[in-house]
Amino acid sequence: MTLNNRTVFIASITCLLSIAAWQSNAGAALASCPDVSDSSSIENPASSMCPKHAKCVSTNGLVDIDGADGSTCDAVSTGGKASASANGKGSDASANVDDVSTATSHAKSDGDSSARATLGGDANATATTSGSASADAAEGKATAKASGDGSASSSNTGSGSATATAGSDGSASAENISTTGTAKATASDDGSASSESDGNCHATTNAKQGGSASSSCEDAGSNATAEAVQGSADAEALTNACKVQATAKGIGSSATAQCNLNGSVVTVTATGGGEAEGSDFASPMCKPNGGTAKVRSPEGNCG
Image 1 (cartoon, helix red, strand yellow):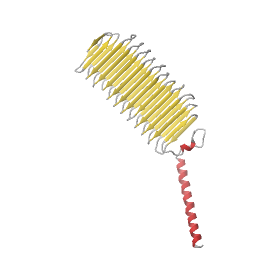
Image 2 (cartoon, helix red, strand yellow; image 1 turned 45 degrees about the horizontal axis):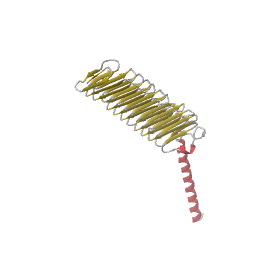
Image 3 (cartoon, one colour; image 1 turned 135 degrees about the vertical axis):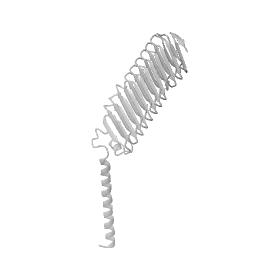
Image 4 (cartoon, one colour; image 1 turned 135 degrees about the horizontal axis):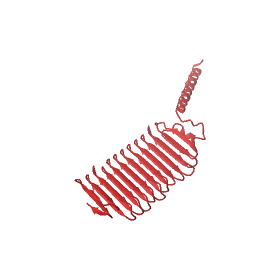
């Protein structure tokens, strides 16, 4: 064998070994990827070949993908649009819709998000930095956002809206079951907030710094608002067009407001450990306890 022939032979062997190594690595990579052989269950098979981040979109069937960064997603649809994307190790996003709805789910940095929509609903869930978000919409709109180990849950079974936002270990829950009502809950810094709209009315809650607050309304035109910073606040609007507001600020502070009569307005505030209760059917109660307590109501005022 001449020198030139020997050089060509060695080069050929080196090339064949390189091809074999590439094929082996490709096979190993594909083995760790999702099964994309069934095109009926993967809407866009080419995009699922070991993507850096998990991204799933479906308008028919199941899309289930693992990202190279340790993220996962799944999207299920019978005709509507389901979109789920996850970014970062431990992040998981899922979206589920029927034939006429839209669901969008985003998860990042160990977040866990879930969005489900039926009957023409629109659900949006976003979870970041170990947050957990769940949105469930039937007819109307449900939105849940969570970050910093917070937990947010929204549920809408009417054509109104429900919005829950939680951050920094906060817990927020919002539920609407009416056609034009709204429920909005916001929690942060280990606060706990819940809002419930059972009629065509509005319930709004804000809790932070370990505070606990809840608001609920039941009839058309009523409005309930509760805010707690370290303290505890509860607002209930139980009849047409009545309005209540409860505000508690400071450790040990407690404020409760309730209305049962059409058109009533009740406002209750407590700070610095004070306790206050007000309604449109009972005499008000104010205990400052070294702080402040204030009630303004149809049944009288104190503080």
